[in-house]
Length: 266
Image (tube, rainbow, N blue to C red; front, side, top):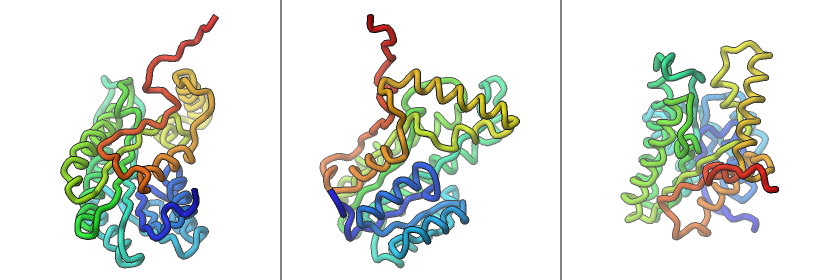
């Protein structure tokens, strides 16, 4: 299919790089006009310039609800409406044992990962409720579904996104607003490296390689996931193909949360 989003306006937070960038590029390719929201001004401006007049960059810190409201208003003012809101921006924290946790990053992680999603959902829904509905897509993580050690605040924040998504879907269905979540897993992004940013470069490289190998070992499908896989899931939720789908959480993880890999098939 081509031009599945023709005539649609979308906002993607955290859209300057990684998973967010993949969604922005796919949405524009499918005919949408997209507002890229991010704190990375250089990357965001470069991406918007590369994509042409159908893309606009707006610096936005989603931990500030006022900035989120201004973002939605800017999309409506520039492109005349808002049909798809992707709350993708997220941060992690240092990878450390719970016994060593000082919770220094707790408020920042929760503000970006939870408050940002809630504010984005609310402000997009305010416009959509008065204009025939729309689709809101919240990006969680398999870390919000599957328990594990390390990055406890990050995991808790992503679990909160899932519960909020389901609750918002129930409340906003009356307005023909669909609210769904994507839970990526095993997708190469800078987030793993950022969780161990204080390591020396060689140790960081070994650490990230070890984490990635563990992810591969836990994944039933052999092929690596990419940002394109997440963009494909987002496109599904953004289009009328999912017109009867709301309140769902879609893991895009090669089967990781489905269960343990069977290694010996002799």
